[in-house]
Every structure is written in C-alpha cells, then in structure tokens.
Amino acid sequence: MNKTFSALAEPNRLHIVELLRDGPLTVGEIADRLELQQPQVSKHLRVLSDAELVEVQPSANKRIYNLQFQSLKELDGWLDSFRRMWEERFDRLDDYLQLMLEKEKKKQFDLED
Figure (cartoon, one colour):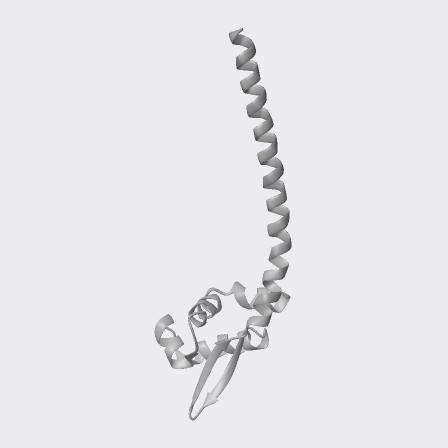
C-alpha cells in the first residue's frame, strides 16, 4: 500500500489516474490533456505501473493505459476502516447532541412552570 500512496502523492500521477477513470488513453493523449511532455508522462506511468495502479496494452505502435482496479480496491478497503470509525463517532456525537437538546427543552419547560 505504501507504493500506492507514494505513487498517488505526486499531483501529475494523481491527475493521470483521474483521467484514466473515464477510460483507456494513450501516452500521447495523456500528455496532451496534462500539457506535459511525453517522456515526463512515460516516467509517471512507469511509477503508476510499478505501483500496480495502471496496466499497459500494446496496440500496434501505441501503448494504451488502463486503470488496474485491484490496488484501488485495497486502498478503498483500508479507507473503509476509517469511514466506519468516523461514522460511529458521528453517531455518538448525534446521540449526545440529541440528549443535550432534550435536556435543554426540559430545562426550558421547567422554567416556564
């Protein structure tokens, strides 16, 4: 997972992953969309490939890149544990706020009597 985080920490690589989310692209298409030189994009793609975030499919004289979802699923699984933790905390906070609201209403009611 460290390779995944390391690869996605660089903004251009994150942008490449976001571009590939919509479908496969060639190196040239990625370079055009990011306004980078093709050698730069190739280096970024190599890092993403090493992190198993993208896969390449040669087609004639082009190299077409796709997202490789397994690493993203692993990342999502890791993040899910944090989502569950925060949801539980927000649920407890909601319960606490409801209790405080009920106490405040009771206090107001008692003052009116």
